[in-house]
Image 1 (cartoon, rainbow over the protein chains, first blue to last red):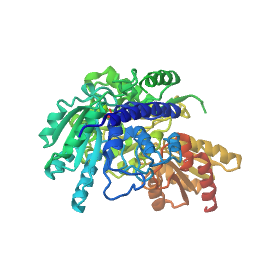
Image 2: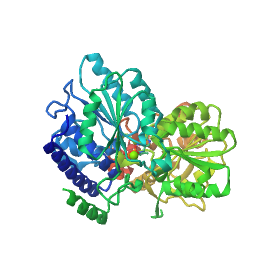
Image 3: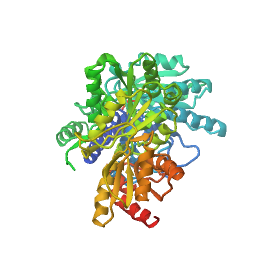
Image 4: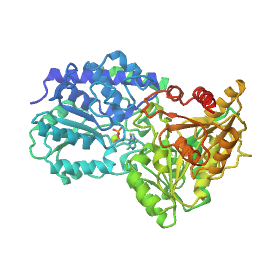
Length: 277
Length: 314
Ligand SMILES: Cc1ncc(C[n+]2csc(CCOP(=O)(O)OP(=O)(O)O)c2C)c(N)n1
Ligand SMILES: [Mg+2]
């Protein structure tokens, strides 16, 4: 089922708003990760506002879909969305990364309502997601588990341990989305650790692969639906993205992985983002 | 006390590059945090001797082991948390077990990566490293010590863990007169009422605490234990005998770190009252570094309070 035009417009409006709010917030606190947060905007927004069966009023409902932010450093974008969905008050956002906050630098399942798994150290999300998927099977529940990973994150060996396990256990209720922005912390993947043909790697591990443009909400929506129809094997969506998407001088730049945003850069970024809103 | 501040990681990066110029057997590895650990300084100058393996810490450390078997002197770099948690197996099974000459540089130790939160803090690294046979464990306090210890690590033969910080730290040691020897503690302030035994950035807090105590008429000795293993038993026993009370201070869980090491020595050789300043077995949180240290009791004020407490037990 393709995305309705009004839904598409709504998602795009939300993404533009989240980008602005994110830059404002990270400028205000002078810490946090803009690059990887911006590249995940459409993926996270489409999941939370169109696809995931989650309800802030019933955050522990047994059959809720499970979302795991493998690339935990994109927490600021996740928090924008969780606040918008009502998991906690919008006013909490400004406390991000400050003493006594519910909002930790990386997602903490004990402190933040709506966070399913504590992440930050890269590479653990997929194995845990597979565990959640197997629990659904044991309990006869039909919820889905969706794990969002960075492309640099794929370099951790445990990711491939999880990949082969998921194929063995035919985890068709597990979906991975790779935020394939081609950039990690120290540089591009090409410079730091080339991953070659990522799709071919997942296929070789027994996964069904769908390639999309990770900034097009309609493609994301269609791929997430399509993955549900694949039986007997897990699916990975490889979403081509741009790190720092939406702010010209951040785009594709590893330097903006975790850099504080200066006043000048903030003003320039907001000017660019206002145009898209 | 000089007011000049430098980031420990910057001093480390510059020193590593300088060592690279002096000895072509020195090689460096990183796991996609070279711009944070500052191993990148070495990497830019010696691209052929620099191996950035991507986000794959276990792979990096096992590879360092292989390099060491062929006579290279590898410095492996990542966050202290990941050095222990991800690379712990090759650290133990390859490097410690067979005494390979690998230097494990764990940066962002303690709470120094403060805003990233508990997932990135390292409060169990000393405990793990110190429990491995054959491992030497060094924890760095100020910029002067960062340079001297990194140099000493390169000259030392055998497995060695270098505990580094992300923080900008004031220079408190005098480079001209400071005698850095692996395994030797250093008395920085003399005093007879009690001894504050500190390591890492907590040394700076200990020096502040000694001044505060002095204003109250309490003369605290301050000892820097940069080498947590092998620990300077003689010095610790002398301090226990001469001052009769000890406060330890470290940016680490009170379980298994410097305090435990000191207690292990003194409980069997010269039992005296000890108080432990460290993280009280909790996960900390995101926040400003100094505010975080204060909230979790890693402050001069808390050292003073513990000093007063230990004196009552004397
Ligand atoms: C195990 C581990 N090693 C290193 C880091 C430090 N780190 C945080 S983000 C990052 C780069 C991530 O790159 P990628 O997965 O591509 O994320 P994105 O580009 O989407 O931001 C690194 C190395 C970490 N968080 N965890
Ligand atoms: Mg990436």
